[in-house]
Image (cartoon, rainbow, N blue to C red; front, side, top):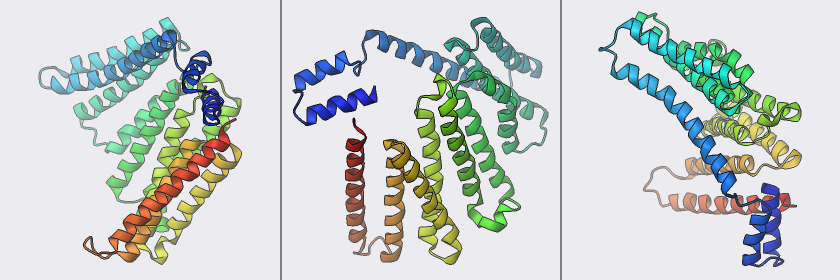
Length: 325
């Protein structure tokens, strides 16, 4: 669909299609959704919003009525919700949209049950253990689901467990000695980068559920955000200790350029990389030039931001025209 849209826009830019004919061509080419596609979109949106809100409703219901209910009733509600959701999966089938949504809801209910166990019995477990055990408990369902949202949920739980582990212990035993205070960023960069690479490779042999690019782009955004934090640390610290972070940021940009510019064009990933360059380079420039916000040299940094953003936008436009058929 995006290829057809790019082709029609390219023809319109060349003057081969008038604005009126462009609109008609988009309708004929299926670029503009018809009533049936809008109905399928709304049905899917309401289905998944319902699954997510059911998970949130169970958590808030238990929290609001915590003092009014006994522990057995609380456990009955949480476990009953999981059993009902899994029963619905068996009834509709795991490959049906409703079955996938119910399996996703069961994964959310599992998190509520684990939190209930921790609050009721005061096991002494740290918060990071909750999310790690949650991800481990839903792993069989994740493998069975063939659902991008389910995999992203598991990956998000692992990211949260890493961050909370660092907050609890203020460092990693080995990585802390090697990478200092940026150790959690390196762990998250490695975790999300590996997930991105595995997902890209799985798309080559996987089914239809792996074809949409939005899950990859979400993971890629997490990768570039972590890499940008490393670059900002290097730009602000500007010492020998930050050389490792600078090399890591530059290496991540090089990989993104090689894969998503040379091998397969992805404007979203390239835009994230361009944004990272603009932010890090101008932060470094501001660190070198400006001593305070009242310094007149801050105008130079502002001009640099405008110029670099304009150059990045023009480069992305050129890449977009190259990607068009």
